[in-house]
Image (cartoon, rainbow, N blue to C red; front, side):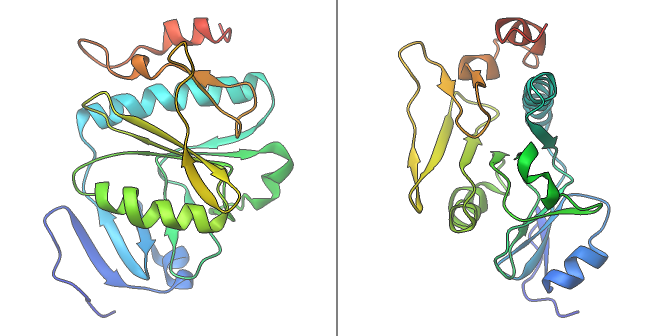
Amino acid sequence: MTVLTKPAPAQTAFAMSDREFLEFAPERKSELIRGEFIMASPAGHRHEGLFAFLLTLLNSYVHKNDLGVVRGSRTAVRLGVSGEIYEPDICFVRRERSGLITPTYIDGPPDLAVEILSRSSEHDDRVVKKAGYERAGVLEYWLIHPERPQAEFYRLIGVSYSLVPLDDNAVYRSEAVPGFWLRPAWFWPDAGDPNPLPALQELGII
């Protein structure tokens, strides 16, 4: 295997095909971006706290309403664009599209992809992967910063993403996950990790 670039401290990059990635990718978060195998650095504390919070909310809501399948950051998503296989922090596939889910990866674009930003991945998440999700037809793409109050919600309008504002109650209402809504203010408590229990109560899940 040919090393294309000198590995940066936060990631390792190698040339790799789609088939090689799906067959040989290691048991840790890695992606194929523009035909390069990228192995990410370990996630930070705030990143993982926000990840656990969002995964709990989405998974609980989707299960309660029998809407489909939610997967976390170790699920490969083959977008159908050669050289682009991502592992979004969270993704959702509607029940009627669940045939895309194979034993080892999702073979097609999910309905929702969520990326929690980090210093090592922010450029790829904002530019390269956003364009990849857009081309593949992912209905919604959320970008959330774990350490400061910054959340962006993109919705596919035609063939392009449009940034969707919060409503008058500072709430984002999803179309990709029917009926699901959230308050971005939940993401950044004054201290500690975001607590899913009050949010689950507001959503009527518990």
